[in-house]
Image (cartoon, rainbow, N blue to C red; front, side, top):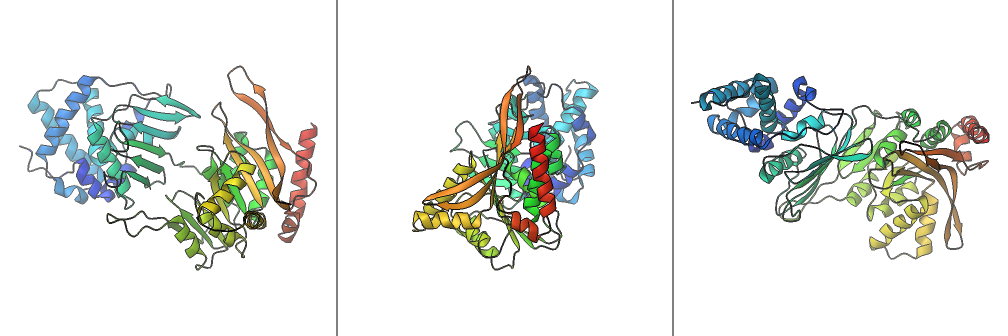
Length: 474
């Protein structure tokens, strides 16, 4: 009946054609955004009857159209073709529904065919930080640091798996039974992790760390009370005078956001090379080379690891190397780079305190198979790392920079550090929000004072330290 229609695509066809999918995402309809409930943020659960009707119409749609022409249509034309066919199916099958229900059904089906299905309304919301899909029936979101259950669900695990495959195929990766774990990203930079059956027992688990459209700055972080104005000024100076920086923190503490903020203060004439598992850094400088790891192919060959990228950086004449996350033996190569003329290099790692970050760094080098004495490794760390910035997500969901810590050197077998700024929790208000303050430790001259003088930032650094001490006195 509908075979003469322009050929459209089912979800599987869309997976093979990411260009069509991305064009549709860019042309998302305002109507989809309008249905999103911002207050309260949990979407209303649709009825079982709705999903049954949608499934039947979707099946008729796929049977009625030729799937080979999706790539030849832009998003708007594809959407209009689907609209006409769905309306005709509704008439032929005698489904009874209002105009509003019909429009909602059309949006859902278009999202299934052209986009990311039930995830589309969530991806359009700027207030969501994370989307966590635990099988077809349960989807959670994080808003303002708190996790909430939504009414979003998928037809079945097959639809969810189809969408997962569509996402990862856009960046040349795959997820299936032979390769059930995959790190990827959406085209807008959002970080994606998929773990599929048989490893995920209750169906595919999809986690999306949403990409912020508006890049945050340190000045904005001060407005959110993540850091004091004086502390933010110190971080700007640290970034500008090419200190080697490690940003430490737990999962979801804002490490990557902070790394992005600090890269704002890299000069435009510096050659910067970034190494990431899934490219998400947003450097604005003119001279940036972005590198991304690669998983093995179906035969288990061809993997490019983070260590491979960091080692290759050294042959690319970098001035700064930025590692999205240090989690293995690449720690050794990054320290070597920091210690051999690539001042101002930065990276993040998972740790709950600056002291623990140093221990983790030492452990990663040891586990990488480097048979070096403990003292040698610690001396390498102290000669390479200048500053550790600690980020944390507190129990009320807020994110704070809790320490700015210098690495001074060795005393016997122990690495010596000193805190420049720390965050103190003072109590809790009536709404359960933690109250605290960023306090300067009163260090007169940090270790990087001479470096600040070399880059003509000495007066600015002295003013920031004086302002922090005056603020503490008040």
